[in-house]
Length: 368
Image (tube, rainbow, N blue to C red; front, side, top):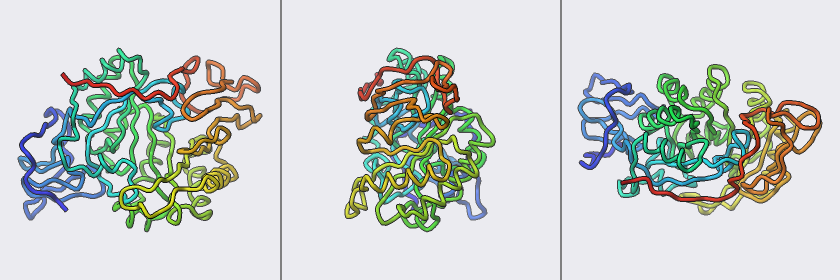
């Protein structure tokens, strides 16, 4: 439901961005950014909380503000085939356009308090900080960057001017026009494919599945963005062999065998604290089904298992990238990203030797 009367302490983006909204016959304004299509009257906020109706249009109210900045390993996004071993400067804002009952970042995604946005920085300051910190990329993460698209685009442009790449971690719930505007500035993304079941999405996320599938097909067919897919496997909800079989067959058929899939363990959180954590054997089974259906790069996450988190050559079976958690333990790729044993190319974005950042997590402050 829309919220009334946004606090005065809000920050709007520059005026050079598209307006993703239109006025309805009854005087309300419809947001055209995501499939939720919130219909708001003047002064109301949408479901995501950070977009509001002001001056007869829908605007972002948190431009330039963040819940915090942190240097992470790129593998934490998770991205296993994009500049492995390198550090990424990560940040997010608050709010979300989804209402996932199992959200693992619920303190940010459900926040309706501006005080969680404790830091702030211009796009240029973020790009400068990433350069100073030795980060090869900046990640739009923690909450979904779709809802702060104006800030995300400006950050991406500032980063690209310094030769820094941009990563987006998103659920892919975005409408067609803003989707094109958003992804033209993104170098790599991890898409949350939360299940392969419409009823699951409607019941537990509050939005439909199809826009996510559309985003994935768009990325494959219309862009050069490197993308990987993550599914949080929740016992009793999206963990059946049938669902994993249908999902992975769809991925291979529509996206190809080279798209990496990450099956990650659920931990009780938010409104699903009564659901048990995902057993390791469930993740192993999902990975096995994916491999049997032709997925070349299938991984498990949120548990310790070097074998299922390492990358193997799909031709000769050589371990190409060994991983111990977020730390690289083996490297058998050439600088061109090919197997050092048989010469087969490994799908991904590789640039010379691997990074050595490891599993470190380093919070930083960028505000004045």
